[in-house]
Image (tube, rainbow, N blue to C red):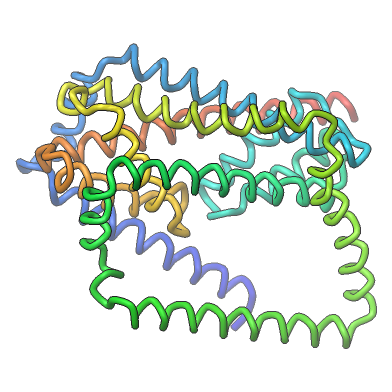
Length: 331
């Protein structure tokens, strides 16, 4: 199968799955005119809280961009905060189209702006992802401690729970087998081609320099503070949106933590921006765990995710335009 055809089929499958999940979620809306119901929910929302959520989102991205600069400094590169922020937002925009593609695109965007080697900056992005994973797991642990009964009850409703332990082992076995096959094939290609081998070695050196930068940070305490602040802001973003709707404003902080956990599970799916999986799992959690009416839960989720996506698209598009202008001026 040719490369372009394979890529087309991959995106076609992702699109079909996303559309199917959205259709399944929309079935939970009452009445024939589902668009009118969503529009009415949007009209009744407290726009002040939604604006607060957008401001918190931008602040979290600025802090993330500054944290990225901290990781790049030990490698000998320290781009402007504006450059790292623009590249970060462009990466978010790409993630809306290509799942997990934003990590590579933001490194390439930073290279165009500041000539920071992409392999080096990608090593720092991997460090970021590891740190974020630790923060996420910690937050999920708190969520399961405080809302354990409800969250475990929700987990039992997921399709993967129907297969039980044997289903989980089968998925793990397939994943490990595929990884071994991929590593073996990659090793064979590298051994057969000297140019590929040289490229791998050169790329690995840059990646390793970026990855090990965390051990050479000047101010590790500030790095930890930034990391914690980013996830606190993510939590506050969820809370402000919940306060914006009459149907959910009564939910407490524990419920917000529970919904944050469910949303994190949904966003882990390899779909653009979690679209589809988020629209199915979050309403299910609101209905099963917090007795929110089905139609209200679906409408809330669509507007929540849509507003968050709109902020990222607007920021990413403006950042892409700004990047083009800066590059043209430099040339």
